[in-house]
Length: 221
Image (cartoon, rainbow, N blue to C red; front, side):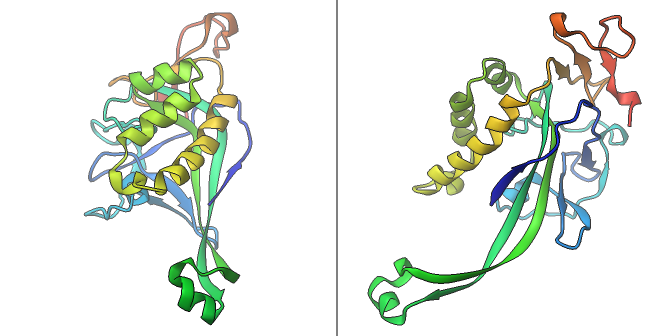
């Protein structure tokens, strides 16, 4: 799995989609032939959902459940905007090893050749929702503190043994891009504005009307 930072956009009104059944956020993914579909976040944690995604813009879902995109807390309060990110996925379809080596080392046998095929492209977008705890680490640019908080909140089956090192490496690449490309300011999530009301930093006010008032993102898109 290779992280590929994509374009950096000056906008922060990318429309998130939620499931009409469970009211939770959905992730976009693009098949190798270019078809965009949706999946529940728990599918990435290898949990099988009990229903198919029914995507709709978050503004059209009554009382949406907005979870933290970092630790999965159900109490996301903020939205940060950074460079768009995508993750390319590949699957190993064939692995060639020496018979004698396999007999001696079994699953630890050295691989001579690997064949792969392209899997779905996961599109993370520019918006990252955060709870108060994760937001504090983002504000402090505490990359390793954020990684530790997220891995501590993960199911043990994803972080057990050597898996923890792999997960930390993936999060490091992903969150490094988030922190390096953050847009000044952040959005506040409220019941009235589920998309967020943007709050510019005082010294970098960049609102549409020049007054310094928060931008109502719900009217965009």
